[in-house]
Length: 412
Ligand code: ADP
Ligand code: MG
Image (cartoon, rainbow, N blue to C red; front, side, top):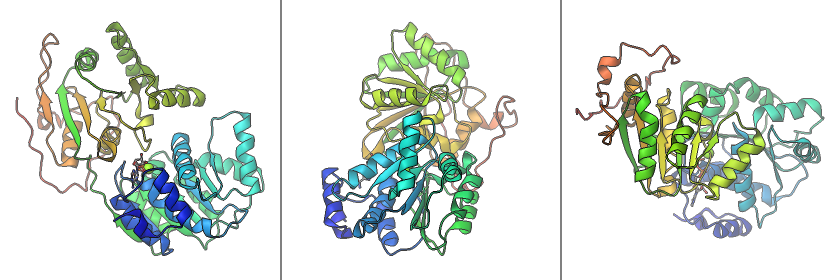
């Protein structure tokens, strides 16, 4: 199928051509016609499958038909980075169609506040907002929401994880009952189904999701004790060929441990964590996207939803405690069928977490021997460690939905 068969207005088709979008991805192919029929939808597809265009294109097509000076679509996203990214994609698609949009998020300066506030007051047609910031505007000024025809929740699972449920419901309460609501999510835990039941009407379901990493990503792992990890990262980076790499760490403390070790080996890197001011975050992300530097050491703040092209390598310095976060992290590489590489470091305590990941993706991941000089590695025997929880970790949610076969793993 090509986009031409979806019969978008010519101005939108031209935007697609200009962005070199030829064929819809599976979630786009399934969701777009349903949205164009006017139905509510709950769509689940893994990260990197093109969910943004799946909701932007049909609403842009509809809004373009008649121009109104009112807020007509509200897109809610979990983070400012994501809101900005959706806005940029909307700018691309609407280049020839001229439907106005504004991203609304916290953390900017006074000028950003004024621009966002003005946009809401004068009735910019598409508002792309983080929940908290949108609510503060709504409580401060008289903003007309009577013309809202569309509500879109993007990365709904992430928003609930971040505790936005209440905020979302408060926003929904202010919107016209007569509207089309679209919910997009990478995963479909029961709390999402609940949320959907309370805000969608007779939704169509689109499911392209078995939570699995793209087949094009080569996944490997090393068993390593904590003290071996930073030297191992330096070793990998020195030995491998790559354009850009993200090293993920669950803790901010380890970010400095990693950076110090890399520095010792003459490998420059930059950090990305919630410690940075909004402005610094944007600067670092901008430089990274523009390939001004190659090595980003980051917490999970960048793992979900953010689209950075051409990451050739992701290194997991530790195992995310939620198995699905592993998929989000390595989803930074191999996007849109380009090849990628993900390497995960497993210490003796985290083995059971990694075992859960292998169960979730229904695949045993190769465990590589440690390079010479780094000493003896732990042995992979996750089942034995199951009864020894790590006191430093939050309680792990086991994936109760998993019904596949147990993964086989290499016994070294
Ligand atoms: P998701 O929200 O599902 O994680 P995105 O919407 O961020 O995924 O899309 C991932 C990447 O794929 C983006 O760079 C986007 O521009 C690109 N993309 C999406 N759909 C298409 C398409 N039909 N053709 C070409 N590129 C696409
Ligand atoms: Mg997305």
